[in-house]
Image 1 (cartoon, protein in one colour):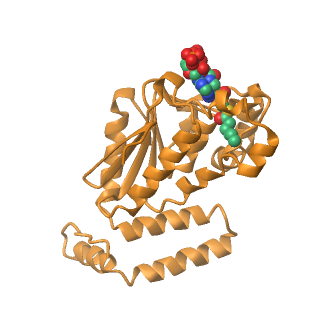
Image 2 (cartoon, protein in one colour):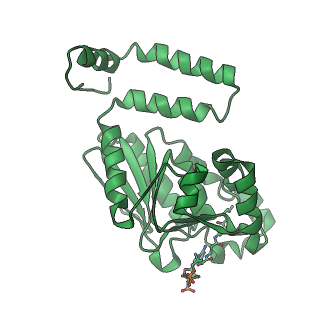
Image 3 (cartoon, rainbow, N blue to C red):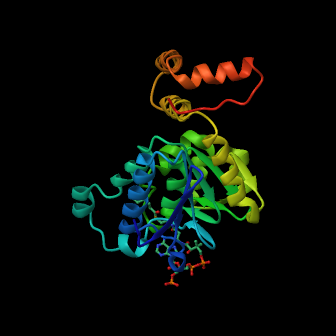
Length: 257
Ligand code: HXC
């Protein structure tokens, strides 16, 4: 499928979605939302894909929701259309997603990155929730996912002042998993994706479900959910293969069955 606002490619089990509105610093309008969600769903359904990378272009991952589009928006329309609820389509993707944050990840841009499973950042990345400067507040998860990721102190600091946080602070705060030199960002993202591709797709989907459950449940319910998933993993060929390969001192050959 051809998309208006993103570029897509896939090879060797790795799909890449590149947000491509560089003139507007990749501001997220309704078309970008539609394109990213549709591409992600198509890759999720594509058996040849096992991991999905989302990245930006030029100076921006995404500088937020499109302010020019939002400036026209009124309460009644936003409420009736449940404005931006469509992003939940991205979080429903079952394959591991990696945000490779190359530059500005502000407002909705930071929020889209936080919808991904693994965040890595270039040294040039800048994160923030500057909605307060526009007289509003985060609307796609900034007050919720950011607080869970970095805690109340930093989340309040960022959301109330609107200041930007650099990549180093983002890693120190627990928002991103790795910071890499700018020119190595996509290589690193592809390496992480290739590692995921080499594993069992059933196991990686179970990991994703289990970790995400920890944000939704009590500890006891989460532990039970994890344990039951573990039990069900024992029913897969990939478990037999993985453990046999260890015992036989060879690399496993997972078949996603
Ligand atoms: C629309 C945007 C944009 C945005 C940048 N542009 N961000 N257009 N929406 N979010 C456009 C600019 O208008 C400009 O277009 C071009 O991109 C280049 O941006 P400049 O501002 O000239 O670049 P620079 O001076 O380098 O400043 C970079 C910046 C700044 C610091 C990132 O652009 C900025 O502050 N952007 C807005 C960031 C923001 O407030 N994001 C949160 C949005 S609210 P022209 O045509 O003039 O050249 C949000 C809410 C989500 O995300 C939840 C909703 C439910």
